[in-house]
Image (cartoon, rainbow, N blue to C red):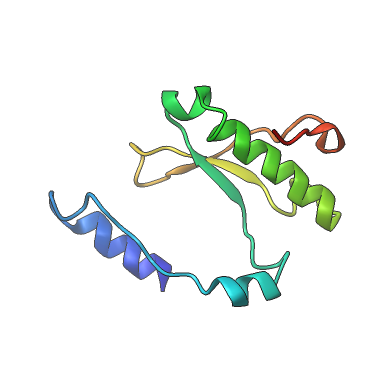
Length: 105
C-alpha cells in the first residue's frame, strides 16, 4: 500500500506534507535477503554529494551488497532521490566502479 500512502502524502497541503514515515519489519526483511531489497538510494542534494556519510557511504554499501550476494547493478540498482521531483523522484546513478575494490572506512 506504499503507492496509496505516497499518493495521499502528495495531495496534503503544507505543513502536513513535511514529514513522512512508515515502519518496516527488520527481522522479516533480513530473513528475505537479498530479495527484500529493491534498490539502494540517497538524496540528490549538495550536502549528500560531499558527505562521506551519505552518497559515498551508500555507494560503498551498495557495492558490498552486490558482492556479498553475487548480484549486479541490474538486479539491485542504486538511485538518487530528487526531492523536488514528486512525479518522478528517482533517477538511476552509476554504481561504484569496482565493487571488489570498495574499502569501508
